[in-house]
Length: 396
Ligand code: 9MR
Image 1 (cartoon, protein in one colour):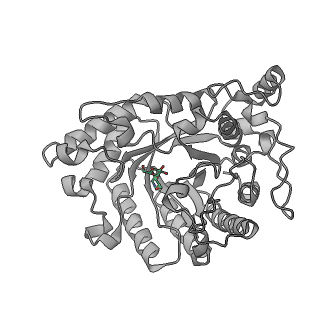
Image 2 (cartoon, helix red, strand yellow):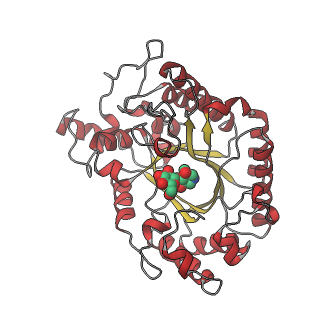
Image 3 (spheres, protein in one colour):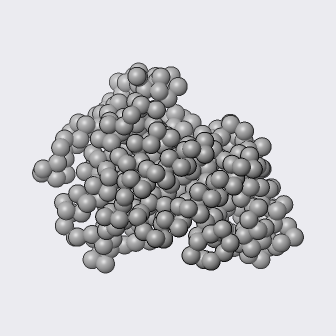
């Protein structure tokens, strides 16, 4: 099956070839116009490790194209500055990805300067970039307990919370209606260890509105953007530990309740922030059982924020990259065996820009290496592992 058939869009490869001829292989005409990215010739990209396989990244061999050939969407999270202040990164992004998710730009903190104002400028730039480069868009995220603006705690009360939530979702999902492939409507609502009924996280939203906020958010989002797939998104669903098992069960119960009440939820997002150190705690059979239960509810599944933390892995880069790549391969091959899994997003594309550099730096001061491309934008073993899993995945 060709890319154009599997993604249902016109074949843009000819266009990129034409751009390539016009500008020459190395030329990038500014961050707003990196359309040649996908056919940029990276065949000179030598493997970083002596004993690695060669990296076949050209044109339709990039990750996004390999996934698309199987009816799977591949993309990555990105910050605005990564695309608009780093043209080499932007070109690589367009080359590898078929989908873009703003890492920060659509959070409340970014969109809401005050209770009565919305500022779409930064997020709109990402949306324009995606449109220009034929990337599908995921919105992240309409309801979360983090990244709330400073005014939130003071100005949102039990009296106005419902109106504030509804207004936010109507305005934001409405602003982007028709442009979004999908939205993370509610993010991280479950955290059983906080001891609340049904495993709910003790978030400001729970305190202000009770459990009903989840249902309300999905219903309002569906009205504001009837075309977008609507996701419930969460983390710590991956390992064979008591904590993750409790969380999987609580998430499953939440999804069951929502479905039984005909709430418009369409997919589960598995964040999949993996830890290279914990990969022995991954149990593919158990994971597949969970995914089947989710799929049996009539839901699709996305891997939404995949990366592999290497904070506690050996300093040796070759060894470290192998462990990270193996974690990607073990996880993705198990998860993609479930046909309901239709999208994979990494939380960043290159080690040049990862949240883990700030949040989980290494004690030895060496840069972290959690993503498919290294800091020089060259493919690592992790890239190869992901490519191999896409190549081996069954057609969707
Ligand atoms: O990667 C994101 C980081 O750049 C932000 O500072 C942070 C707060 O907004 O959020 C990070 O992304 C999180 C995502 O939105 C939800 N799941 C966990 C991600 C990593 O913390």
